[in-house]
Each structure stands twice: as C-alpha cells, then as structure tokens.
Length: 432
Image (cartoon, rainbow, N blue to C red; front, top):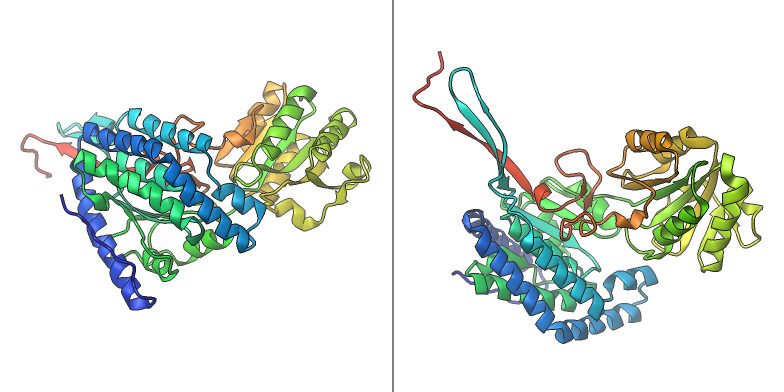
C-alpha cells in the first residue's frame, strides 16, 4: 500500500501548486484501486472509520472546541457557529451515518439496463464510479466523514478541502477515515485532505489538478459556490441558494401547518433546508395567518411581511422586495399572502432557487398540482422542509444537494456519485 506523505508548505503559490498536483496524481491512482475493490473491502474501511470516530470522540470534540473558540473570537455569525459546532450527539449521528452507508447495497456494477439487438448483440448499461471527486466545504466538519465515506463506497477517490475555520476538527475526523483505509488495506490517498489553508489550493482544484479531478462539490456560502460555478473547469454538483418556501393552502389543517412551519423554520435555521418564506392562501388567511405569525414571533423569529401580515402584530416588520429572494440562514422569515395555488407557484418560480419547496394541504388535487408544477429538486407535501437531507432520504448521508438539471439533482448520495458505461457482448458480429 502506498502512503502519501505531505508537509505544511511555505506560504507561496508554487509550493501549494506542487502539493495539489501530487494530491491529484495520487488520487487518480487510488481511484483505479477503488474501482476494483470489493464491496466487502470498502465496507470494512467505512466500518473501521466509524469505529475510530466513536473511539476518538473526545479528541474530535476538543479540536472542535478550539475551532469554535477561534471562530467566535473572529466574530463569526451565530448561523456559522451552529454549522461549525459539534457535540457528542452529532458525532454519534455521524457514526451512524457511516454505518448506514456501509450497509447500503454497492452502487458500482449495477446493471442499469440490458437489451438485445436484432443482430444478436447484447448491450448492458453498467454503473461505474465517477473517478476523483473534489469536495470544497466551509464550516461543517462532519462533511469530512460523510463525503469521504460516500465517495469511497461509490468507488471514487476524494480530495477534501475543508475551511480554515474547521481545520482542526476536520483533521481529527480525517485521521479516522485514514485509519479505516489502512485497516482495509486500501491506499490512504483514496480519501485525501488538503493539508493547507491557503486559498490557492481552491484555485488549483477548480483548474482540475491537471485533469485528475472529475467532479467538484462545493458545500458552503453563496460566495464560495458562486466562485466554484464560475471558475471550475470540471463539472459541479451544487446549489447556490436555499430559498425554501412553505405554502399553506386553503385546504391546510391548522395544527399540522403550525407544526410543519415551526419545524421548517426553527429546528435549525442555518441549514439549506430551512424555510425562508411562508406563503399563505388568502382563502384561509383569516383563520391561519395570525396563529402562524404569532407562533413564529413568540418563538423569537423575526417576521418580515406584506400588508396583511403587518396587520397581524406590531412586531412584524415590512418586507422589502429583496426579502422574497433572501436566504437568511437565521431566525428570520418573510411572509406573504397569495391568491391561491397558482399565485403561490408563480411566486416560487419567480423568487425561488429550485432547492426545496413544500405545500401544506389536505386537498390531494392541490398537492398533486404543486408537486407536478413546482420545478425544484425536492418538493414536499405535508412535511417539514428540513427533511431535505440525504440521511433522511435513506442515503446514509449526502455529499451535498444539487439544484442543476444534469446528472445529479437533490441530495447527492451513492447512486448520484456513479456514472455508467456500456458493455457490448457479441459472437463475431461485424457491421455491414
């Protein structure tokens, strides 16, 4: 087994370029080994990594505390700190996520289609790994584990570039992944971590590492994702904004609507599946608007509303046009009364980001139309938008959520981290 040794470079672009080039070459070599690895070998590495994370929980939490303290001292926003901070429950959830990934069927080698041509040729479409996947992320250190394990299970090598704010936490988690690779006899370069905080490393990844990087997945703020989408020379799986809507239809049950809206907005405000806009059908506004708005205000959520919403409570601030297209990632929500389902769909199409949108209604026809006409990666009927998560979809974890229309859309799990090739079986056929 080949071990990749890296040292912290001097602060100059040339040394960073050398390190990143070596990461790319080693990852390409590791990707070939992973594409041939048995599912038993891959699972052994993931289970061993999960066990190491559980065993080294205290060291991970100590490193995370140092990261959080530094970010706090630097004036990081509460939403950012929420994404950065780890606790024992979250670490155990990460372990369970890895164990779930290991228990899932192997996505590689699946026969996606098989057909026979009139000339006797048998053609199979077979799932294959994508190759080398670069993941660029900011504050969430648990992405290190999720992304590494998902890429590994799908037969891909991974190059992980975490943010400087989570540098220590990510390093400790990465050590556990490497321990799993060693236990299974797989190359350590199969899950590589960029060992420097220099932003030049991101530029090298966006350039494709001399053709050794096949896909990039950015996980972070709007500026990071926008840069990746603008500059990357390789395909990108990403979403730019999570402008998530909950539409309370005239057929909504009020108790159900209150529970869904509260959870969708306030369970965790700093995640991309958190609701940012509440739309209420004018036909039920007399009975539903005030209870929903008052509930949010009483829970400490700032409400920015249109004229009918302003009339509910003096604590409501007037909404500006910009509020309808703002991802707050905080305890703030925009509220608007709309004239029925058609206007709700039009509002979502005009201001949404095609991430996740929800309808609350007991009317099956309204739900059917909403699910059919709202062009988002995830559309939900009568459930919280915070289910927009690969783990909640049964994927074990996700490497990100994609809102594009090519290849991967929605939570990017194991199946989305594969491509395919055609295998053609003949018996001497030649083309006339």
